[in-house]
Image (cartoon, rainbow, N blue to C red; front, side, top):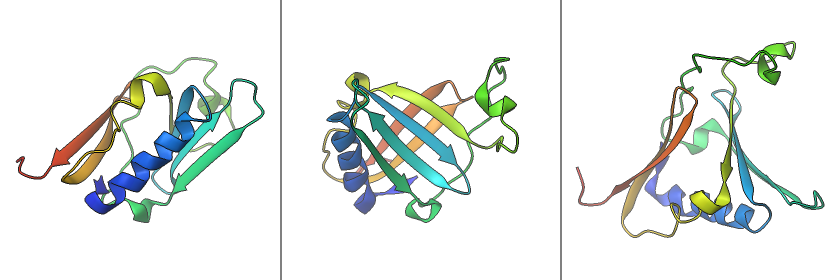
Length: 127
């Protein structure tokens, strides 16, 4: 959960990354925080934003996916954290969602069993 005064810089970071690449890679760990990354198609430009858990009003691990592929890197990597969560999102579908908004009280990022990413904006005047 991101507080209202932090939503604008967070969305601006995603907007900045949208100028770098076509995909956004979100990596989350309850201990390390959230990292947003983008890589250009030519692999010549890379950009990254990292947010510590203290940036968020509330920061918890997403649910672990029910099904894991046999060739899943996180399950085969020695010493990897099972709480680490990673998802790739097309900028084309994300940028219209994070457009500047007025009277934003908070932004909730959530995942349903690690398969779906949701952005929920709480607007002032809504319950």
